[in-house]
Image (tube, one colour):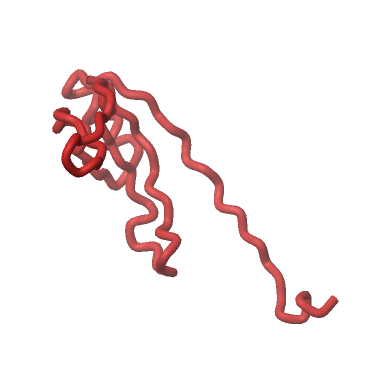
Length: 92
């Protein structure tokens, strides 16, 4: 089962950056999600796709995947874009 390795982004609902630097290894689902006939919620029987492992660095996540023979693809980290402006810029 393939996995993807990506860097967790900052939570948009909070200003803190506590888990923003972590690298995540997440298994991909190979089955389609089907709606439940009773509730209408989408779900699947693949419990492996619910597994999420966190690592402090990209190299640690790659080493884990290679050590356990897990095929993976790496999603490169995106650059943060800072928009620096002052309060006076609102009145230009």
